[in-house]
Image (cartoon, rainbow, N blue to C red):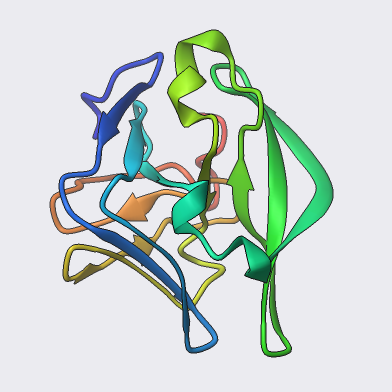
Length: 150
Protein backbone atom coordinates (compact mmCIF):
# COMPACT_ATOMS: atom_id res chain seq x y z
CA UNK A 1 0.00 0.00 0.00
CA UNK A 2 2.95 2.32 0.48
CA UNK A 3 3.74 1.78 -3.18
CA UNK A 4 0.27 2.95 -4.25
CA UNK A 5 0.47 6.04 -6.46
CA UNK A 6 0.03 9.70 -5.68
CA UNK A 7 -2.13 11.03 -7.23
CA UNK A 8 -4.38 8.01 -6.65
CA UNK A 9 -5.26 5.42 -9.28
CA UNK A 10 -8.69 3.91 -9.93
CA UNK A 11 -8.76 0.18 -10.72
CA UNK A 12 -11.44 -2.54 -10.86
CA UNK A 13 -12.00 -4.66 -7.74
CA UNK A 14 -11.08 -8.23 -8.77
CA UNK A 15 -13.95 -9.90 -6.85
CA UNK A 16 -17.62 -9.28 -6.02
CA UNK A 17 -18.29 -6.69 -3.29
CA UNK A 18 -21.10 -6.70 -0.71
CA UNK A 19 -22.17 -4.27 2.05
CA UNK A 20 -24.55 -5.24 4.87
CA UNK A 21 -26.41 -3.23 7.48
CA UNK A 22 -29.20 -4.14 9.92
CA UNK A 23 -29.76 -7.54 8.35
CA UNK A 24 -30.00 -6.24 4.77
CA UNK A 25 -27.63 -6.33 1.83
CA UNK A 26 -27.53 -2.62 1.04
CA UNK A 27 -25.09 -2.87 -1.88
CA UNK A 28 -23.66 -5.69 -4.00
CA UNK A 29 -21.68 -5.45 -7.20
CA UNK A 30 -19.33 -7.24 -9.53
CA UNK A 31 -18.43 -3.88 -11.10
CA UNK A 32 -16.86 -2.12 -8.12
CA UNK A 33 -13.85 0.16 -8.41
CA UNK A 34 -11.15 0.86 -5.85
CA UNK A 35 -9.07 3.97 -5.34
CA UNK A 36 -5.42 3.22 -4.59
CA UNK A 37 -3.61 6.06 -2.84
CA UNK A 38 -0.26 6.15 -1.05
CA UNK A 39 -0.56 5.37 2.69
CA UNK A 40 -4.27 4.47 2.45
CA UNK A 41 -6.03 1.12 2.27
CA UNK A 42 -8.21 1.15 -0.87
CA UNK A 43 -11.59 2.84 -0.77
CA UNK A 44 -14.10 0.72 -2.69
CA UNK A 45 -16.82 2.32 -4.82
CA UNK A 46 -19.92 0.54 -6.11
CA UNK A 47 -22.13 1.67 -8.98
CA UNK A 48 -25.11 3.54 -7.59
CA UNK A 49 -27.48 1.22 -9.44
CA UNK A 50 -26.01 -1.69 -7.41
CA UNK A 51 -26.85 0.09 -4.13
CA UNK A 52 -30.15 0.20 -2.25
CA UNK A 53 -30.56 3.94 -2.67
CA UNK A 54 -34.03 3.61 -1.13
CA UNK A 55 -32.16 2.96 2.15
CA UNK A 56 -29.77 5.90 1.72
CA UNK A 57 -30.75 9.34 3.02
CA UNK A 58 -28.81 12.26 1.49
CA UNK A 59 -27.16 14.52 4.06
CA UNK A 60 -26.06 18.14 3.79
CA UNK A 61 -22.47 17.20 4.70
CA UNK A 62 -19.65 17.80 2.24
CA UNK A 63 -15.89 17.33 2.26
CA UNK A 64 -13.27 18.15 -0.32
CA UNK A 65 -10.50 15.92 -1.68
CA UNK A 66 -7.60 17.58 -3.45
CA UNK A 67 -7.77 14.90 -6.17
CA UNK A 68 -11.40 13.84 -6.52
CA UNK A 69 -13.30 17.02 -5.63
CA UNK A 70 -16.35 17.52 -3.40
CA UNK A 71 -17.91 14.50 -1.70
CA UNK A 72 -21.55 14.30 -0.58
CA UNK A 73 -22.67 11.97 2.24
CA UNK A 74 -25.53 9.61 3.07
CA UNK A 75 -26.98 8.05 6.18
CA UNK A 76 -28.09 4.45 5.77
CA UNK A 77 -31.49 3.72 7.34
CA UNK A 78 -32.89 0.19 7.62
CA UNK A 79 -35.92 -0.74 9.74
CA UNK A 80 -35.24 2.02 12.27
CA UNK A 81 -31.48 1.38 12.46
CA UNK A 82 -29.47 4.39 11.29
CA UNK A 83 -25.82 4.73 10.33
CA UNK A 84 -24.84 8.40 10.03
CA UNK A 85 -22.38 9.40 7.32
CA UNK A 86 -22.03 5.75 6.31
CA UNK A 87 -21.54 6.39 2.59
CA UNK A 88 -20.31 9.05 0.22
CA UNK A 89 -20.18 9.87 -3.46
CA UNK A 90 -18.51 12.36 -5.78
CA UNK A 91 -21.48 13.65 -7.84
CA UNK A 92 -19.23 15.83 -10.01
CA UNK A 93 -15.69 14.46 -9.62
CA UNK A 94 -12.59 16.18 -10.91
CA UNK A 95 -11.93 15.27 -14.58
CA UNK A 96 -9.10 12.83 -13.71
CA UNK A 97 -11.60 10.83 -11.59
CA UNK A 98 -14.66 11.08 -13.87
CA UNK A 99 -15.09 7.30 -13.73
CA UNK A 100 -16.21 7.65 -10.07
CA UNK A 101 -19.30 9.62 -11.10
CA UNK A 102 -22.35 7.56 -10.20
CA UNK A 103 -20.42 5.41 -7.70
CA UNK A 104 -20.87 5.20 -3.92
CA UNK A 105 -18.41 4.16 -1.22
CA UNK A 106 -19.20 2.92 2.28
CA UNK A 107 -17.26 3.24 5.52
CA UNK A 108 -16.72 -0.34 6.73
CA UNK A 109 -16.69 0.98 10.31
CA UNK A 110 -20.19 2.49 9.99
CA UNK A 111 -22.06 -0.48 8.52
CA UNK A 112 -22.28 -4.02 9.88
CA UNK A 113 -20.04 -5.74 7.32
CA UNK A 114 -18.30 -5.28 3.98
CA UNK A 115 -16.95 -8.15 1.89
CA UNK A 116 -14.62 -8.47 -1.07
CA UNK A 117 -15.25 -11.95 -2.38
CA UNK A 118 -15.66 -14.15 0.70
CA UNK A 119 -13.28 -12.06 2.82
CA UNK A 120 -14.77 -9.78 5.44
CA UNK A 121 -13.14 -6.35 5.27
CA UNK A 122 -11.59 -4.83 8.39
CA UNK A 123 -12.34 -1.11 8.81
CA UNK A 124 -9.58 1.46 8.76
CA UNK A 125 -8.99 2.97 12.18
CA UNK A 126 -10.26 6.50 12.84
CA UNK A 127 -13.24 8.39 11.50
CA UNK A 128 -11.80 10.27 8.53
CA UNK A 129 -10.74 7.63 6.00
CA UNK A 130 -12.93 4.85 4.64
CA UNK A 131 -10.32 2.26 3.65
CA UNK A 132 -11.20 -1.39 3.18
CA UNK A 133 -8.47 -3.57 4.76
CA UNK A 134 -8.06 -7.14 3.54
CA UNK A 135 -5.34 -9.73 4.15
CA UNK A 136 -3.39 -8.60 1.08
CA UNK A 137 -3.14 -4.98 2.28
CA UNK A 138 -0.10 -4.22 4.46
CA UNK A 139 0.14 -1.15 6.75
CA UNK A 140 0.85 0.92 8.69
CA UNK A 141 -2.23 2.91 7.74
CA UNK A 142 -3.27 6.49 8.20
CA UNK A 143 -6.33 6.97 10.38
CA UNK A 144 -5.25 6.08 13.89
CA UNK A 145 -4.38 8.61 16.52
CA UNK A 146 -1.40 10.75 15.49
CA UNK A 147 -1.40 9.68 11.81
CA UNK A 148 -3.51 12.38 10.14
CA UNK A 149 -0.54 14.62 9.28
CA UNK A 150 1.69 11.99 7.67
